[in-house]
Length: 355
Image 1 (tube, rainbow, N blue to C red):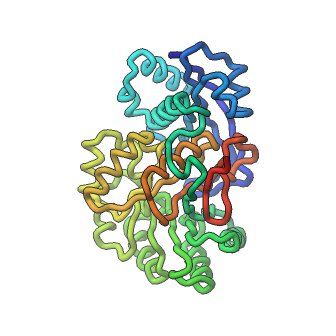
Image 2 (tube, rainbow, N blue to C red; image 1 turned 135 degrees about the horizontal axis):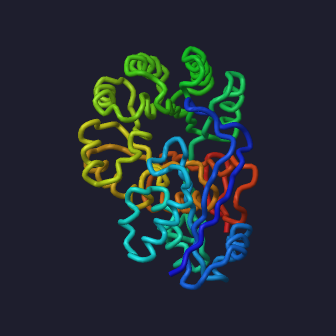
């Protein structure tokens, strides 16, 4: 087995803001796997037109760590990718990648891609065949109050029945005022609202904010306090009038034993799973198995991958039979130039493959 690593930079179409700051560019790496030697020109041709994968009998996956979140990210990260690829090729044991979640996801995707007849159809589902849709939420990134208001209205006009807002960067009174405006336009029976704090609040602040959000019939809040404080998060989950979903809290919790321990100790209402951050599809399966056992809900979201990674995440999500619950898979439109000819299409609040 042979591999090749190709770095690639993505540019956001607008500064995408969270309480941690703004994203303007995104560094990713594509990993190519084949039974024959691979050259750079062929890899670049495939990224320009992924439909060429079947011609060259090459599979591709995306390694897209978030520099401010991923547990394995560090300086000279391409060297880390190369080391992991060499170890995997030598051992053929995916377990050697357990503590490198984004690399795990990239390699397991590339292996599925290599086995697929067209390099792109990774799972045999109705979604993959273009016969079903996945409902998605409309994501409203941080910005000034007027910009966020405009984005909220645009999402509603586009047909989204679930909107997720990033909160914690503006003054909380401004954010609550925006949510009140939204609720006046659309009651809870017509519009589900989720908020994501990305760890912006202290424990005391979070409890007060959640009490006010509950009065607005907000569905849930993601990661109200910084990750790492299991005791504090457990207290909030026990006392909050609003369901709490864990996101960043799951990062770096890579072994089955630790996953079980976290869910038992914190017992959130939901977990938000990102294959790039949480050990690939295998790692997400481990989370889902344990969450289901503890009656904890979940949904799947991307972690700002290009269409290569998003295609894999969407097809994986379709295997989980998540029904009408909106997933966080609408991020492919964030970039100025995404990877073409993948087939992912958004109409209103629905994601589907257009073959």
